[in-house]
Image (cartoon, rainbow, N blue to C red):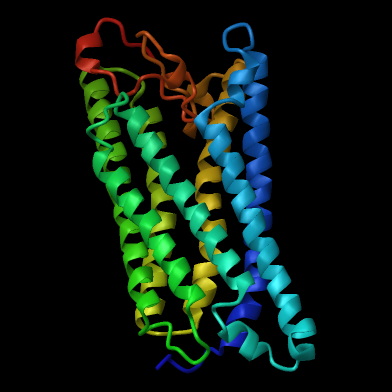
Length: 330
């Protein structure tokens, strides 16, 4: 039996307000990140074709994430109006929200899960590029990501078979939901650990070589940890509310999509601000706040087109630095 204290109606009403606020915050960050990225490529069009700013995995994934979040928020608002205006003339909002097999509820679940799938794919892509496109490193997170997709299909199907009066915490859908969140949590922890490990390795090497790039690597490491901490903390929050069988888990679940979006866009905005500072000729070492945090790190090695697409400005950061001691420069 679900914990008392938070009713299903109050949980869903809180969702409408909080998701609207978080979605608005995401939109601001999204447009800032896209503007900064396109502007940066336009300023350096002689070196990098401006079209590459759009036709690359990072930009396309961000667009897809924005579409998924927008659809999720729209469905949340539509369900609010259905509950209080159209379903039984607004006399039974509890019955409307309690029926998890409603088509609008299924659609909301799909868009929410899709945003998490895209978010996990983006962090796996970061690992792949930072580790110099080493496929062995991303095999495990890809397997977890694939399992997450399978669980998403399972959750969606189970919800479509839901009958009013079933206990979502004890039904088959509950086991799919638990597996779902465990897999995305493992993916984020694994990916962040490998990214952090690679950055720490390069920081140690640069300090050994008395290079001045260590502070920039620490800043990038901080960005990665902050982003992962936001996503991971929210996943643990949901797991806690779900295991306690509290209706608060419905609010936490619905807010996951904008949280994932904000966690990603915060990184790109801070990186974009660093790019803009560098393009204007500002000394990165003297930049403050988010400017310095996003300063690109460059190594004098061959760069591939895929490496140029990396949104963090880490130019072949996964290269074997030990073999480039005489060539590396920041």
